[in-house]
Picture 1: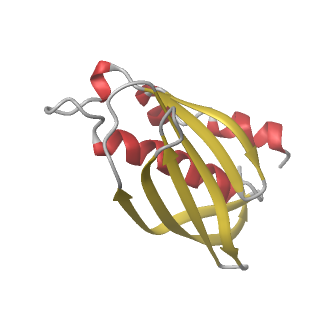
Picture 2: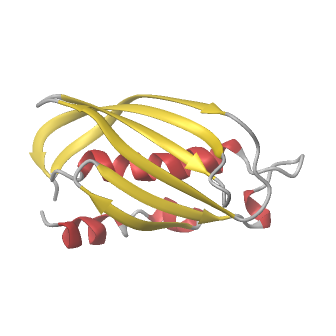
Length: 133
């Protein structure tokens, strides 16, 4: 699967689209996406909801881990929130840390407009050995 087909495949992610996540870039083992913060992304205390940040990180995790054309499904993730965000745009950048025929690990950084670190997300996938549909 070439990069254009892969991008088209992930544009079908209805949840990411509903949340407002925009896929910006991808390459083998890497992906970038952004989320423009809107009022509905805020929790009761006025900061961006952790689930919105997690969803942004999860999309680039999925794109980077499936970027080789092999079905990869998350088996473990962890996120650490460093500071809160209120306004502007969040950027998620995924990078492949380790890959073998069955498992791969990714590190995702979520940054604000000033490139301050908002959260770190680490995820591991199981690589099924099947090609993406």
